[in-house]
Amino acid sequence: MMSFLQKLSEQFAERSPRERVLIAVLLQVLLIVLFMMLWLDPQMDQKIGAQRQLEAVKSEQQQLQLTIDALDQALAKDPDQQVRKDIQQLDVQLVRLNRELENSMGALLSPQQMAPLLETMMKESHQLRLLSIRSMQPQPITDVSQETAQASNTSTDEAKNSDSVPTEQPIQPSVRAMTLYQHPVKIEFTGRYFDIANYLLKLEQMPQRFYWQSLDYQVSDFPRAKVVLQIYTLGQREAFIGG
Image 1: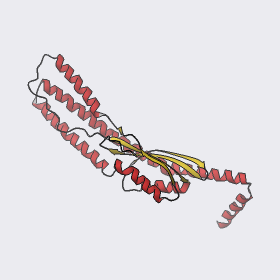
Image 2: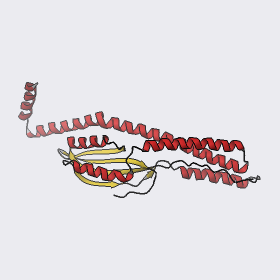
Image 3: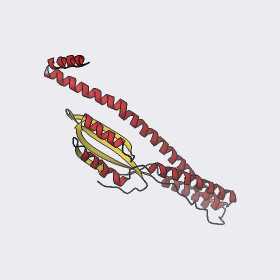
């Protein structure tokens, strides 16, 4: 094995400087491709799976909320014990879904913690150079309130055009769907390939969880590269955490 490596080393030394640079660049590209295939791609697949599961829960939440509001409108026009029972059952399901979301979010980084923690870990990686880090504008995952309001307005208009007069106030649901917001953070830094890979691995191994959104890797000044990383966590508040 040692003779084989020595032979490769001698052959590499016999190459012209230009050929040695080209070989080094090709090896760097090969390492990047292996990194993408063996580590980053599975992480992105895991992220996509988690997002789909979260979207499925939110979709079910949204449908339950719309059904509750529709039943409220029906009860306002024609109060009935069965409608009350249906609303109570839907409230129970909505409580269960809200609890599942809270449990899923329990291990996530809070929006307030994410940027400072990333910056602290970056400072511990002395071989990396931080260029910038900032929190992005939060985005709602689903806008339940708007669609619920539209359904409510439609039912109200129908009630106004009807000859029937409500005999009592409609039953209001005791539980509302949890509204979630995506809080992204964008960080730019430079470093060597293995130092960058080690930093990303440390992020992945943190006890606090988050979601990977995008990673852009550009070799700017070989062997150093520039990385633009964007990750996000979830929160129940829309308030923008500047930074």
